[in-house]
Amino acid sequence: MKSCRFLLSPLLLTLVVLFASQVFAGTPPYAPPEKEIMVPVEGGKVYVRLNGLVHKAAPPVIFIHGGPGGTHNGFAGMTGLADDRMVIMYDQLDSGKSEQPNNPDNWRVERFVEAIETIRQHLNIPRWHVVGHSWGSALALEYTAKYSNNVVSTVLGGTFISTPHWIMDANLLVKAAPQTVQQTLRQCESAEPPEEDKCSAAYTKLYSAFYTPGTATKAEQDYYLNVGGNGFNPMIYNAMWGPSEFSSTGVLKHYDATHLLDHINADTTLFMIGQYDSARIDTVQDYLALTPGAELAVVPGGAHGFYGDRPLITQAILTSWLTRRDMR
Image (cartoon, rainbow, N blue to C red):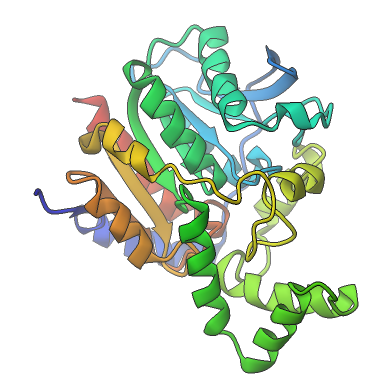
């Protein structure tokens, strides 16, 4: 078995410099889309934004957001990649700026996967890099396993590909919280939860450690206000996942795509997590063991939302990865 490789070593000095510059100098404003379109998919039309429209030799990259029910907003700091290639971001059906029929018949993994392929065909792209985050990493894995001939490389960020593994990790994270927070969370997940404000405070305390530590940057805030669309859709999240990150009662409660790791090209697969990610490194290393030849990148200082927490570092890691895979 080939050993798992870490992507960080060649980039270490650059990442340290970027980490310092980001902490002390802040994040530059996010670039607006060069073009926005609505693409017809099964169930409705999805919003797609494009940057890097001037002809680029490098294969394009598509970003697949998390949720279910999230938006592309968290990727908005990645538009610097458009210096080398077309950058494609979209909102899944029923999310953000896409149409929102809120029809539960659309909330199927296979339909989400087919929407990605429909976007590729609509844009007439032969092959592209596929970058998924959280729930989006499950879609990226499913897409790559089904449409491998269309994929240059795959990035499984903030890796969610198995509900049982995610819930196991969530329980471990809860156990690491202060005792008072643990007690409140257990009550909130019970059949008779306390008042909503009490639960919200406990969830916020736990989320802040592993999801979005600190306050949003000005670049994030401006983008959400001016470009971000309708935002998160709790209806689809609750139906597909459940009431919180720490329990699943929806249609994904038994979801497990771990077996698909055996159906993708490991040499063109990157797992990427934040240093403080709720996608625990122990679990992601288990996925790596099932994908010999794949690589792992850990974003210094990043939590689960590292694309927004540490955009400059994340972009540097992706630039290196995409460029190396372009040449294969």
